[in-house]
Length: 179
Image (cartoon, rainbow, N blue to C red; front, side, top):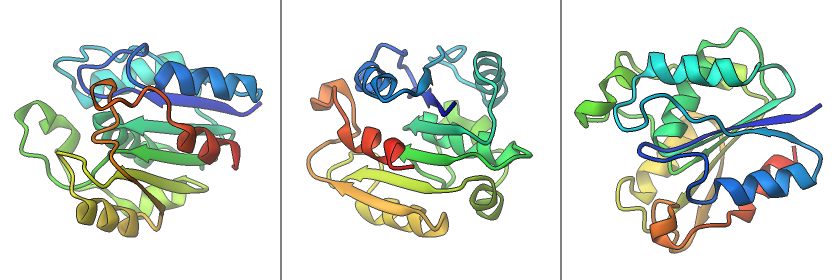
């Protein structure tokens, strides 16, 4: 059975932004969808988030991982560490460059290994907005190129949060469903 693991953003919960809507739509399509509450959402560490995610979901070849914002960075690190090839990786408002935010330092202890991620994901999709306040369109495009990912640019979605008016994200459902 195909399953989806949705990894939330920093300061977020499984009930925030577009996650419940995407979960419902994918479940309607027959997917098993897991949206875990990652430990210490306000003061995240890679180790704690990895433990939370792996405790909630057994990742295998039928898994699709969706990450949003810091959850996308975490998704990169998670896929990088796997010994299997997952079905696909969908990254929303993500990045792969050194982040100077002190709270993110454990996610960037070493450079991202793009080759491992490419080898561990059947398909990679990067979804970004033309007006993201944190990651420019150019940075997102280069991020997608480094991952040899399909790049989907949407208009006026900000950082894909509820505050940006994003409570539904059909592009994610389509990307997961077209797998």
